[in-house]
Image 1 (tube, rainbow, N blue to C red):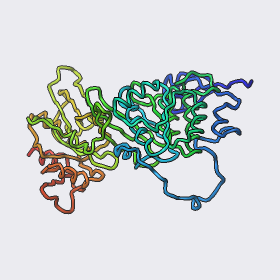
Image 2: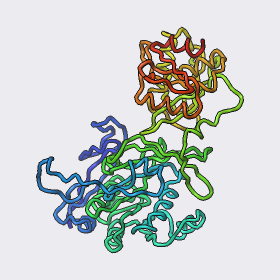
Image 3: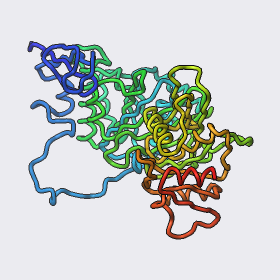
Image 4: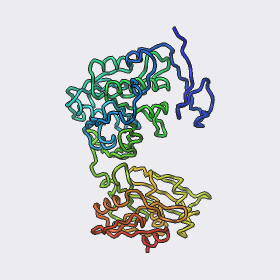
Length: 461
C-alpha cells in the first residue's frame, strides 16, 4: 500500500505547504492552514470519473491543441430552471455541464429553492436529487407541505461520491443536486467529511463528471459565521457559477446574488418571498423596498442602485444625533462603513457641515447591500436631512458618486436609472450633470449637478 502524502492547504487562498505554519505567506491569513492528505494510489473516484492515468484537471478530459479560430462556437443549449428570478441570476438558465454552487445561512431556503426547481424540472427531463443531510422521508414531507409534484424525481440518500457516480451512470440525469458538498467523502482520502481535502477532492470529482457527461450539477455549500462559503477557497474557483442566498430572520424576503458566473453577469440579483408554500418570485423588487411610511420623516431618501442588469429603487435612512461619547459612533447596515467615514469628511470639507461630535447611523431598508458608489450623494443628502431635521419630498430621487474634491461624478446606466424612477412616480431627480437625459422625461424634472455644494443647494434650497 502506497504511503499517503500530507500537505497543508490554506482555506483562504488555496496555497499549500509541506509543513504547518501559523500564517499563510501567500495571502497573509492567520491559522488558516489545514492538513490535506492525498493517497498516492489510484482511488475508486478517479476510476469512476474515467481518470485511470492520473489527474486531468477540473474541466474533464483534455483535448489536443488547436487554433482559437477553429474552436466550435455552437450555441450553449440553456434550459430554464422554472423560476425567472433564478434564471436571471444564472445568466439566462442552467447550462449542460455547468456546476453551480449555492451558499447561504441555515434556514435561508437553499434546500427549498432546489427542491422546487428539481420537482419542476423532473416533469420534463431526467433529474436526480442527492441528499446527505436529510432522510428521504424528511424531503418527501417538505415536498408534500409545499404542494410540489413528486413524480419522476429520482431521490438518493448517499454521502459517498463513488456510490453517487455509480448511480448517476445508470440514471443518466440531466440535472443533479448534491446537498451538501460538506458532507460528501471519498474512500481514498483519510480526512473526515467537511475537511479541506474531502471538500476539495469531492468537488473536483463531481466537476469532472459534470463536464464529461454534460450533466448540470448544483452543489449546496455551507457558510461560515461571517457569511463566506466554508471550505477551501479553491472550491469557488472550480465551479462555473457561485450564488449566495441571503435573508434576515425578521424578513420574509430572500435575495439571491451571483458572486461568480462564467456564463453571465455577476452581481445579478434575484428576489424571492418565503411563504407557507415555499419561495415565490418577486417580479418587481422595487415595489417591496419602497413601502415607505405615510408619515414623512427627516433622513429618509430614495436612491437607484444597479443590480446586475436592472435598476433597483431602495430607501436609505440616516439618523444623526448628539454623541455622549468621546469617539462618536458610525454605524451602517447595508452600506460600507469606511465609505461613510470618507463621505462625512467630504461633507465637512466641501459642504460646510461638521459631524465630528455627532453619532451617525445609516441603514438601507429591506436588507439590501449597496456595493456601488452611486449611493454617495444620496447618503450625504440623508445625513444632512437628519442633521437639519428637514423632511425631503417623497417624490425626490438622488443618485451620483461623490469625489474627494467635492465633484459629482457620473454613474453607469444613469438614464436607465432615471427612467426606472419615473415609472414609479418620482417627479424630481438630482443626478450628475453627465447623466442628464438628452430628451426630457415626461412628468419628471431632472437637475444635473457638478459640485457637492451645488447638489445640496438643489436638494435643500
